[in-house]
Image (tube, rainbow, N blue to C red; front, side, top):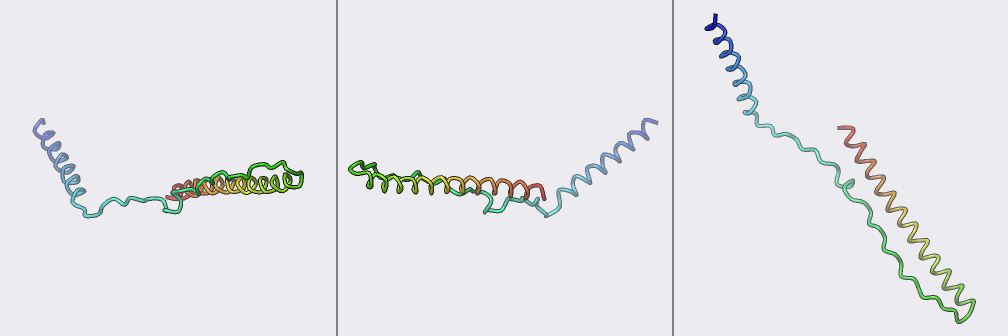
Length: 101
């Protein structure tokens, strides 16, 4: 009885060894899937503007300079919001891309 069990075990071990050996013979390499390049970086954060100094020599000059400062600051805020949205869009797109794999 022991001889039969030993023979069966030897056969099963041989089968397992053959399967492992055959699996190693394949020439196919695992495919590494990388996310699209355009989703790997975000728009750069904008540099804060250099604002002109205030000039209080007259009220009209002060108002004109303040209008320029307000415009530069507003454009910088808008660029910052666009950069943040760009990054959120790319993170969302990367999440959707990875979910589709």
